[in-house]
Image (cartoon, rainbow, N blue to C red; front, side):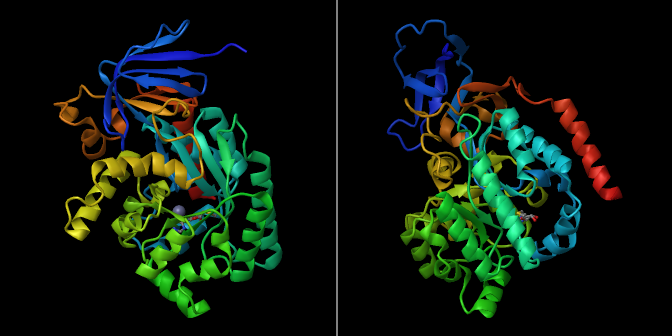
Length: 433
Ligand SMILES: CSC[C@H]1O[C@@H](n2cnc3c(O)ncnc32)[C@H](O)[C@@H]1O
Ligand SMILES: [Zn+2]
């Protein structure tokens, strides 16, 4: 098999957490892996494709650890509502009408937006997941996909949905050269009764897969859980055995000290979704306390219907700003930490090894930002610029698994024109049905 080689010359490379977080020099890629990164020019790499990095800043691709890609079809459909009203009165009635094709075009629209905006990995929890997997396979993006299940239905329907979740995970985990992996995902403790949740824990054990769910997103949810089951969501899920599996919870907005300690003890990760939490007025997660306790905190956009975009630069910036505001501490979530949350911690929280860092031996998932633009000058501190000044619009090139998927802002793997048209048609079709 012939190997594919790339060498980047004279670039600036971001390595958050390293002694020298901005490195000037060279990076080589062979097939799906980074083979060298350093200041010195490597020995001649024969037959390599050469990229001139002189006006570019290279950084790990962004990792979006919670979302519902097909919900881009409902962007702007139901603003300025609380979570419960938004779900029950706006999202669920529309989602009931979604066909597999709607999910395909909604997911295509989201993957297009994410790739062009520098997201190289996304987690997706939804229905009709075979169609999302098709999009992931075609686009070249890395994806952690799962059939999310709402159990507010008769037992036979519950069991059928669970069987779908298991079949999806069995069929897709490890596919697309390992770019697609899977998890087991009950939607939330308030939509899945305890005996049903236990079946997901069992399935995760049987398949040896991690678990993902929404948890403690609103105060109302926490209070209702205590009223229904005598326990707040964290203790409830602990009691049902969920944390015996490697787990990632989305949101974790309303957590007390004891709950943070429980999550840390079980090594449960938290996907922090600041944009969605602000928009739905759910609150602000205790990120500084979570990080201090040793919890892996990553970043997610949630769906585009509660955000209302999938710009991970925006989530990074929000994470770096709102925790300063709420704690009164200007050192809360400093820029390197925000960048780690969007990259290395992101990959760790969704159980991906070898992803999220520019280092020899790691997967070649990386992006290049045009740093010659007014809002990214002067080049005082490029890591600071990545967090506080950049946005999805600044992404020039994107590589996933060593393959270039965005070049000069154009997606090479998806038909942008077709996706625009089909997504609009899908939305109009949903309104008529
Ligand atoms: C069947 S899995 C997907 C399910 O989740 C819903 N959803 C989207 N955003 C949120 C959120 O912030 N909290 C809880 N549930 C959410 C989506 O509408 C789907 O029905
Ligand atoms: Zn969600």
